[in-house]
Image (cartoon, rainbow, N blue to C red; front, side, top):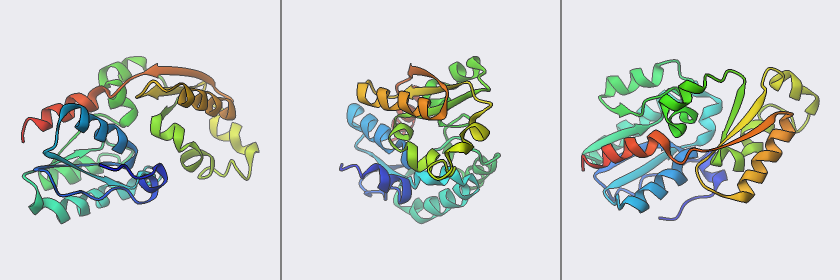
Length: 213
């Protein structure tokens, strides 16, 4: 499977190939991770559809977009699973999935389930700003430009003055990506911390979903 560019996953997402029996509906920010898991585990019966990752900047748009994706493809698959956590929807995504009879991954957001929900909760970090592999690569698109920091860098301390550190949750071991994450922390004036999380609860959850096919 050819993976679209990060910019395409940000703005357009990824349509399903319609080859499998199980459809996973996910955020474009998780496309690379899910495709890697599919390849590593031989999950050829799982198909992937991704909504535009930039929806995370407008979480109220996620539930209707997920609803539309499920409704459009429901007759094409035996099972549909939603690989989104709550993601700032205030319980609306869970309500949508319950109404449609579709399961979703547990957790408040991807930072939590990528580290493992129990481990993440134990940190109890109210002053940490998180980045994943995808968000490091797309830092300007998700942080700098939406906040206007490319035009008004003086706003940085207003937005990030209450944060103490940037936590890079690394799914891969890529020195170049780690260095870029370190530079992201410097740009925000935050202390840098790197955690090798891998796929966390995402892998465990998809493994269970895969057995249904």
